Length: 426
Image (cartoon, rainbow, N blue to C red; front, top):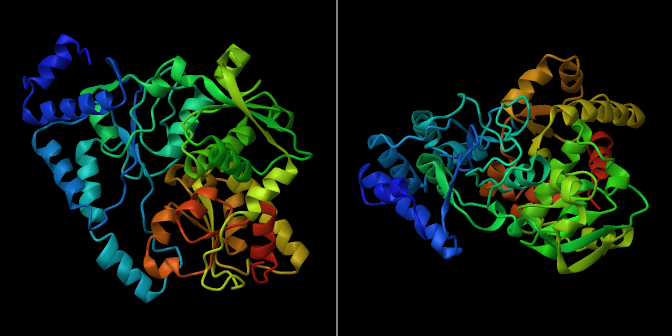
């Protein structure tokens, strides 16, 4: 890798041993992927994936402390993934004991470290940092040093920023050094599509289900999607961006997609069209039958497949303001049709603290409370990591949560029926 004089000086130790280690790590990372140079990180803010004070993560805490003690602090403020626990989310005494004493006992300590390193706000904990309410929305063409997979795919695809699927800790090192190795999705060639996805459904495809199908088929490749603009339109309004948030998260977790293009909709597809498609690109046709096949392929890993759900999580990634409002109306309507006043399954809608604050300013917040739905800033995945919670029959419409935990996936419409009307899972 060819370094600039300034980068080489850092590697040689002119800014201290700790900073030299940071640069060496980035150089080794770049070498592993054939990068020939570093490029500047140009975004205003960074985003970190490691948000949880898990007791077993002592090496991370030690590394962070070394950075703090050496004064090696990023010039970028940063947001960070969601907090792992919230007292408002249902948990029995034994589950709470495991959360607080055996799992996330270092949470307060780690949050203090994050504040010392440059946390954007005291409650800047969310996986959807790019929401307008949060304030960490990159611009087109900006180079990022992020790791959170659902945020990376959104930034690359919907915003047109440039970021690889980095790992935790690499994200803050790139921010501290102010540069990242240039390879993959940071290059023009790496952003070209090697798959063409043809959407031929008779109705608007479920975002999470469509993303899952594409992710499992193309894995880490870049897909160019044709026919989806028929259902989404050609403008990135709030509803469309919300759809793409959930769609992208599923491509990134059920596969390893870091970038997708949608014909006539996403920025680069609008600008370059079919020029983004590599010669010899493979083709994957998705119709309603294919989506049904994918849905039926999901394993059910509950102890009892026909158990009645004990908890429902919505919001992985965190829900948008538009989703909170539209789901308030859907829950109200569902309850009215079922003849119930409150949801019949404990239900948690998760969103960022900043979005929840804006939601509380609307009349929808009180209306949603009246249905019995709980709002929280929690990370559902971190909640489900508790072995006692993992034994519970939990339902979700998040394919990311389904992939990483024991929770069971249902479509939005199926979730609505279960939480407003009830009945055993089928």
